[in-house]
Length: 203
Image (tube, rainbow, N blue to C red; front, top):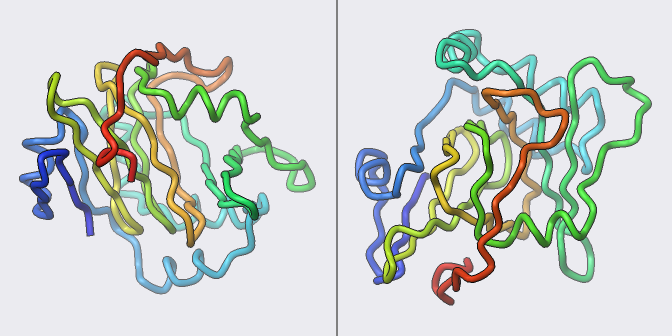
């Protein structure tokens, strides 16, 4: 169930409320069967190439038409995995890659930058198959929010949204991510370390 929690204590669960209040972040549901979601939860992590391509094979053609009609034509499978001792591994898989290739893992310094409040210079749209995608967002000088999208839901952001990810422990996250520009070279990020994330906006 998608959820918006504001730093002033208010919580919203209706999608229309989230989309009205979350500062430009929008969420929704996509077409996927419970059998597919159950199978993805059982995959080993980091995802193998074949398992990542399974997610793509199960992405509904009508949803693909929807995103491509809005200019989102570049995609990858992202996989965030909690690691023993704390921390996370962020792995990306791409179509057309050699199934024997080792997964591409984001280095620790890149993850540190990613966790800093930032703008990413791309429009992105994520479809969650397991785990959760959680985004903190600055709404005003004295108000922040956290948006949660879970399996079977999507979350969409644009370059004007100052946000920071919150990686969930427990079930690894696997999602198909769509973008409106090529992924190579990597998207540029505008970091704002001067923005203080409120304690209630860290989880």
